[in-house]
Length: 301
Image (cartoon, rainbow, N blue to C red; front, top):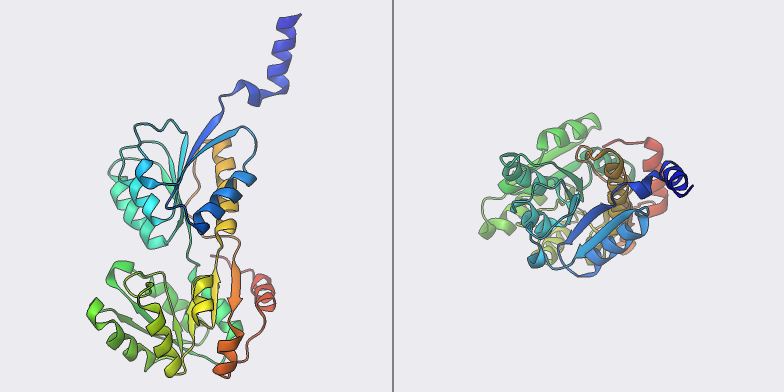
């Protein structure tokens, strides 16, 4: 009788018979964005998935990991995990697309399974928001570094379709940053910032914003802090939004044991600095209205 009950239990609750899936979550730091990602990720995971969290990347070691899936959150964690000798499937989350592509090169030779959840926004979404947010600004400026490997061809094509022009300049060197930026500002009426640490770093963003303000050129950012610093608006995914999607990817992996193709965030947020808009005499809709319009367009990455 006991054997029959046990067999029936295994049929009725197959998850109990299977080995519990193990996930190793490696955070690029222990500051607020990483902790917010970890909290949301854990809250959205189904039962039956055991997660270990490492909030100091120096504590990560492929030799001690027995996980079925490693999730590296942020560029520092992505680099650490990618350079390791682990053969465990890896999801690089909250990383720029160019950072992921850097890691692809190092991992492809090692025959490892990997995918990514990008922190940056797809050009299609950015261009559509540009069109509905500031339709009178038609000349887009971009300053970028060679290492960012910006996909200018796609951006140019999307802008041309909407009747925009693009002035893109490559940074000659860190010493010429502000000279190069002045040239871009002389040829545009809106400046599009990208996640490029050689240009938009904590030591440079204040002076870039001051320069753009003096020229009367609004800057479009890629994170909420940029709006607080003086960007006109930003289109971005929050750590919580990215974590929810990472949890869904993890749930799918638990069933199929395969990772999906690299992807952009399905959810996103818009933040606007109305003080900057008023100072530059720019009429712009509220963030909620812009997001509703953008969602109605059903823009696909």
